[in-house]
Length: 480
View 1 (cartoon, rainbow, N blue to C red):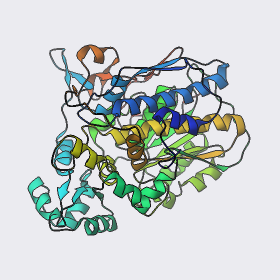
View 2: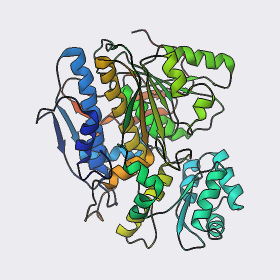
View 3: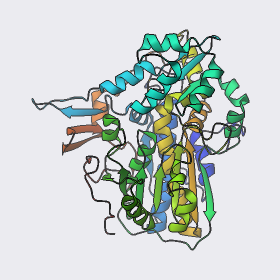
View 4: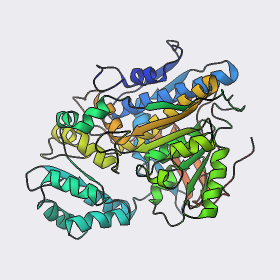
């Protein structure tokens, strides 16, 4: 299933990756339609299809446990709303008892103001990325400017786009030249990704089949280590938690975070602090790996490998592990070693170009939501559960690879909308309430959030634990 293989719906493309038995005609149903956002892209439909595919993968696990399958339903508009992240879909109770939208943090507003397409010296456009202080510093050192929109605009205007893209990459910073979809597919990296499936699932070692643990949910008893930050990777982890897995987030106290993103991707998980640069902590992390089922990492390519936590090392430590890699540029190609973010993927693959054209903005534009992040997270948890089903039936150790750029290309394959100008941008209060989940006494306050939007006839996804504070749990597994 690749960019070069003709047109399939997003769901059909993912079912081709899943393989396995054919679904009954009535197993999966969709309601509603795009658009929720002012965008030509079929954001809701693509997210709904990815979530439905994840649910089918969970259904496969359920069948292996019980012999039964479930019916699955999802609303396209509700699926689209999941991409709002920490904006209108998270409410916090105030002192008067009313729930109000959680305010966007100053750090996020600052990042959004600077992380935009800026005109270059050769009249192209370039998106530098300014999230996290140390990465912002690297971009500013290249541009030799202040961290204000006017200063960034003036600095980018002094560079040719290709030269700036290469210099940013060489500095270990993040940014991308805005390309048209045609330019991206003609580029060696776009051409490489177009030849690969949107979710790559590779058996890296043989082994005996490993039965699934018992439990009341499809992923009950599955132990997941979540070593990710900021949206795509954490969204993969929350997807596993929603189907019953014990998901333990692992980070270190010194690592920078974005608080609203942590809050909204931690539901149903546990959280502990371990620093793999510390020998004692690294030993504890290896012990956790040895008793785990899924390991999700979203670090810069080869970063964990340098610290002894790459796929080859962990495959030996834990035969049967499902190792999930989430990054910007995918499994290979000339940009494979580069780091990136949602906005960078939108820039290089053609999303920005199409969004700007369709909205008649007169310049490239980012979409209203971090759609690549959330879509990539859903695809990662889909791939992880497909691999778990294969492990249960035929054994083996697996590497699942997903990327923001692949997700951007996947979205484009679904075609464009003609009418979207009057899209509401958010669910109505009534639509929100149909999926709202209350979580009181968290470190973030009393929350009311858009909960899981998938409906399954026996085991609808849910958050079984309250939203944790970072580092609030001990680094150990729950009994099963």
